[in-house]
Amino acid sequence: MLEQAKSLLEETKNFSAKSIEEVEAFRIKVLGSKGELKKLFAEFKSIPNEDKKEYGAVLNQLKEAAQDRVNELKAALADAVTSADDKMDLSRPVNAELGSRHPISIVKNQIIEIFNRIGYQISEGPEIEDDWHNFTALNFPPEHPARDMQDTFFVAKNPDMALRTHTSSVQVRVMENNQPPIRTISPGRVYRNEAISARAHCFFHQIEGLYIDKNVSFADLKQTLLYFAKEVFGEETKIRLRPSYFPFTEPSAEMDVSCSICSGKGCNVCKYTGFLEILGCGMVDPNVLENCGIDSKVYSGFAFGMGVERIAQLKYNVNDLRLYSENDKEFLSQFKAEI
Ligand code: PHE
Image 1 (spheres, rainbow, N blue to C red):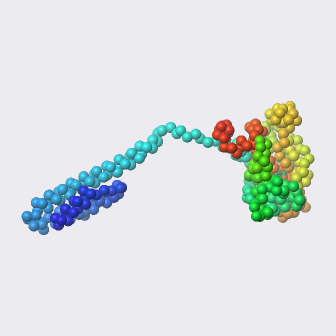
Image 2: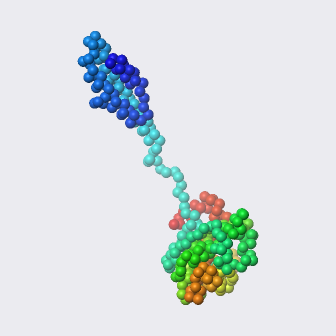
Image 3: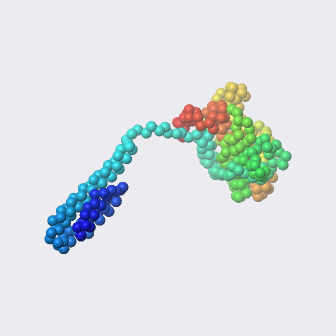
């Protein structure tokens, strides 16, 4: 028994712990109401008289040592926790700058909101697209120059796949999977193989719109776009439609808005024409409707597509497209006040 008490004393002196839980387990094992010390004290009567003195002394030492050790270790571990906490001063003012929304996101969200208000849903699709959705379904003849290597990034080893050159591809997907009435806008990133300069980039953002129903006319297109132009550039804005060509619309047009900088009087931004080109549009070609499983004798529709960078350029007077993708903090921080 004496030996047992002595070895427990030794163990106690050498005991160390990494957590409060370990210390507590040790306390219960040695000092607890069913612990070792209790058992050793209970053996006192069976100890030969001549050993009782030493045995009693060892037990007292053990009790004291165990209590001291437990207190010491608990205090040390609690200190360690507090000193880690000390490093985290929660009252210290935050020194990190808050970011701001990217101008492209701001303008994109505004445009989405304008069309949401008149019932347009949002549709999205893949950026790596097959030939059918990006070109063929949209009535691009096989020899059309837009399919050319100079404009399109094709996927190596698979000439059927390319980075989409416009989000009209998403509208094909919507038409294939839904019957009219369809009212949708497709925001997204698009890619074209162009040399990067102030006026062109190899990727940019588009928002394309599509409305298909019975009896949709060019007048509906015009009214929708006038509403849009006024919402973005102000109530005074005028629009102008010029005949144009797209394989997927017939008739097609390009839309100009009166220059918001000089109010149509003529300045260097509008090159003294008083108007700025902002989007392409037209009545969806019946071939496209048929390609997508929509009866062109029953339904008609219009489509339009615009570059978000172009709208942002006009709203914020940003004249170099490269600024949008350079992550320049000075540039981006100017949009902090916008939502
Ligand atoms: N898809 C055309 C483009 O990328 C824009 C457009 C959309 C034109 C819809 C007409 C109708 O330039």
